[in-house]
Length: 386
Image (cartoon, rainbow, N blue to C red; front, top):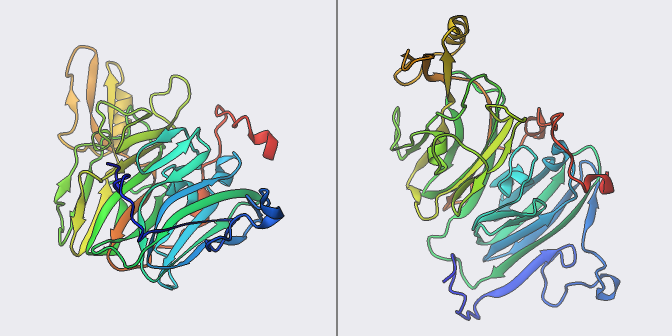
């Protein structure tokens, strides 16, 4: 049995289609007409500021698989492609997000990674198997916000179906960034969508700005259906929410993992890091409202003789939790968790029964401060396409 269907079941109620530049309408018997069918239109070069329609499909149906690629490039080019999806003729998008972030990769830095819902095969072939039902119509658009041309290849596989699946939600995807965060104000991952619905998951990126030994003590909190000051679901720390423990490094597992950990040799903290978390076997369902946040709390340790450094740190970093442990063992002056400020971004994936608008992507906000660092090496293929 597969994740979404029985692969042995032959269902003639599904009309299997795909759209790409070789068949932009998805019409039956209309694929590969350019150059007498000899690979005449596999891709398209997008000018700066150009928008192209990837799909405009009358339903009901379901988008089942996205594949996309564009040449390796600096982060500010890779993240400059933006995806928007509109349901049922709406004027506001229900998906508005950088393309790479839609596939689960923050900071404009793809990396080899795979899980059941998204993958970046070899770090350059982007796939998503996130189910996207639609009713009357779905339209997907991609815009190139880079300052240079970009070559785009894509294919979206979908099925047309006789009637919508009962209780199926419509996928909403939104991007948020706070650069930098505000001290003691939790970063908001998802908010404002009306239920009934279900939180499918998220990918979160951190550009680590603050000093310390560890950035990820903050708890993920899920407020649902009238929760006010306190949430119903409260985690125990960032690495715990991702399923790891005692810190966090690059790794992957079926429903959670860390695609990216960019740090200089010997550094205590990364410069860029991102994680994914998918609530498939552990659903989070809401009837009316949903709000998801993550705290910015870190851990730091001071050794004997660092009294001045501790005093300076305390002035800028209010304690969290139980505060500082003084002289916990020989050689240690103090250790504990404290509030901090970093640069957070997040892409939230939420199913809602009714189509709703999400905040429109601000390209300038998404592209700020993500340039490649001096120690990061360009992809070997970049020179071919620069």
